[in-house]
Image (tube, rainbow, N blue to C red; front, side, top):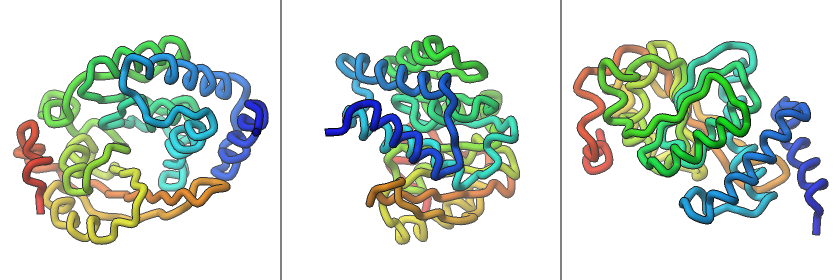
Length: 245
């Protein structure tokens, strides 16, 4: 069985396959994040994945795979919002690796927000905040609507639903990227019209396997072409109950 040192070395090698090299400070932030995740997971439902090596690959490496869709993440001070962030994926790993990003973590469960705030404090992360609330409410005018360059989500929902939650947050010219783990050509095809209604345009899909594994992933990139009509997103629960078609 591999010891922790070997697993950490493997983690660093996997990140290098994305062109990411961690200094000692960033590596220590990831390790502290893992420890906190496991500790808090005993009393807050954060993740079903707790094995050290699996968390490194399926949460940390997976989160920063956004670099495959947006290669200049390290060069620009993008404003990014992570919708339904849960335990902070992908937002916190992105913040650790790309400290230049200004990140907002949005989640509807206050216990998770408490965890995220503790992580932000313990890891000494700056230009990042955790917000308690629903996407349907914070995407309203006067809140966080159309104020981000990038919106990301690893939430489990189909593309029509995710698009209604996420596209309203993006500025014109910005992008929404959905992290997916299945080959969902039909789901994507069924969401094209919804994406258009919301002011977006499907741009591309990036398919890949997580390094040194057979774990399939894809990133769906939607470009914001015009303002989202004011009636979207609809009131809480409606996007899920009656997805746009």
